[in-house]
Length: 197
Image (cartoon, rainbow, N blue to C red; front, side, top):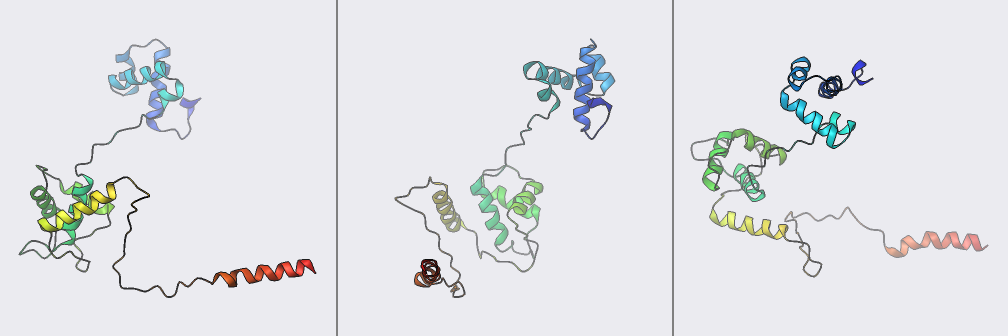
């Protein structure tokens, strides 16, 4: 039924073809050649069918991506560097300059511009734009304070010692006024009076 058509993925169809060919008694090499897959795919599909079931054999195995090149603290440092002033003689940061800067600031021996691009995109940072909020200087003192704050956020929550964050924005939210509790209760009291009458 699966092989007769529909909107199934090509990979799923190939796995179904492998199982049908296996049932027909074909060898692994012949199956690989006729279906157009590698021998490891044939072996893996058959193994998943034997160890699991048909659904396991036809479905995708979860793929583990590569480990992140930067730790959380290093990613925070990258964001800080991207928000700081660019090197002398440069109008703005480029991905290559940031990658080189991170190699200097961390224990990474190399870092690709693509890694930098992805981490900045995740944090919605665009250092090539002219107008943006900037950190004046990322130096050893700044990094030490940054790591202290990040370590605090990484600690397990303790109800006896809550972490309280303050926004430094000098804005008073006077538009968000709550209705006094007494005024909230009055309409209910009127409804009760009407019900009793």
